[in-house]
Length: 378
Image (tube, rainbow, N blue to C red; front, side):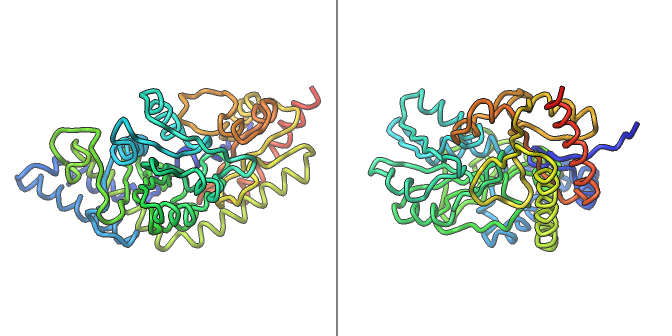
């Protein structure tokens, strides 16, 4: 029996790059002290932290003080959502029905507290129409929270137009860019108040997220304590993982162009293999997508059963967001896009990464084709 496994769930988490792991191990052995301590060990850790912050700032062409570290992207998004976009009971936020739960559920909680939240539709395109956003803004709007790339479908939001609208109305804009970095170039457009990223999507260890703030932007902290991160996020920093994350970001300088081109070609090849061999296969999301994501619906197939069969056969994929506590339920995002329960239940997300080879794609496609045919003809 073939024990080979092909990992096609890079939107959930990426393996740690060996170069990044080497850097992590160096610091975990030599820079493990508390960076807030005044002794030599602590100051060594503080220096490593400062260098990591500067490294990330250089990549995004901002100043180091515009980089704020968190433990997770969920924490960062929730903190900035509440501290910048919804600081009072009179706050009024605009978001969409297709956001990751870190924004969507947080906005639902804010709404239950009596604050106003407008959830814009996305339709089968899978992204907010900037013109609809512009028409929705009122004099009471205090913030906009949207993702630049949907983690389930890979559909891009036109953040450049959204940012221009936010800037025109002087409204803070929070961008969830967790599913963006490492898959396509990212630009911090004027009008973006804050963008949040995660280490687990860029081949770095878990336990780090960071926000890039526009110059002059600040927010009310959610966590209080020792006053780390310019007083915006208290708590001892994970210096080794932050250093490793900064190296992963730096590697994007040289790797991104080739990686994105290669992944895009393999994704297209993967879809051609499936679409040519199987009838009744549909791509979810009509809008332009990033390079690596295929969210596919298979007619007359149970997506849950298919995932189980694929896992047993050595293929790792998912229904969508991995953060919903392992739930195998029809995707809220697909349902909100207007797809039927039947189509959502028959959908599987495949997300490729820089380690995905042409041979991996061919091997996985052959197994998927057999699994779908087996379900349909049982």
